[in-house]
Length: 382
Image (cartoon, rainbow, N blue to C red):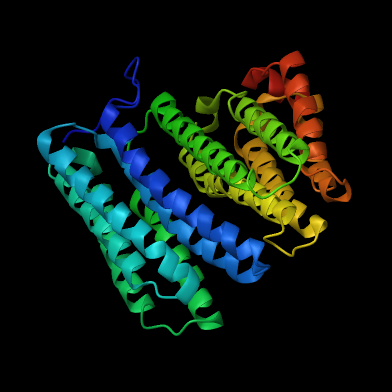
């Protein structure tokens, strides 16, 4: 299990990696559905908090495997079997999401998460046998991940409420510090094109899940409304927003965003908000439809915020990690301002209208003003 060449030409995502992503989409879909139900009933604090906690586990397990694979993917039978074990852990995790959301019972969720992470420990230990100068880093990864799993098991003993949330935040901070601890002396190699392709593919899958969830909600609403006009409007605007989000995400050359260990941490960690916001967008659309069909008693303003806040978070997140350093002053002004203006959408009577218009304007600006080479960006800033 030798380290992969970070300069390997034509390195692309493997079919195993794509298969691996699919089971994570199951977990994302279930978490998004639970968020929808909580928001639709006006349980904002509990819904957002539970969603943030559960999505952290989904994102962190996916990201750890992805970065490991870019460094040590051998695609032999043992690597594949260990990956399948992780996939099994994801499915167990997904099965426990409703109970964690509704009852605060994290037992099944923690079990699935620990299965995923123990399999990851086995991968790192196997890599350490032939990692050469990277042996210390791979063993620190294995030790750090294993130690944190003990904390997550102890998490089950923490009573629900503020104390449980506090414990989660502390344990999550320890979890995300493991890569810093493992690689502070010598970094494992990463392939910039491969790793950013993996993030892009997962973004596509999450956006696809949002379209599917929104479409299913619209189909269900067809039997509950007297006129199709509002449904058609929401359908068109949802597609426009999703297409614009896709355009904005893939506008910059992402491989430029991970030129150092520090920038790779920023890129990977900020994607938590990007992924979570993209998945939460569908929940917001479903809340809007619930209000339209009378299944939710939320005000129109509150329902609209469940759509506009995820869009704004997505825009700021992707601008910060990938667009900002590859754009001129016009683009770097339009996107942050656009994210703020999106939050004004709730003042309009038609859901998502202003958001869709602003996103289309941002796309037009990106078409007119292509990415600027990094050297040129530095010169302009100077």
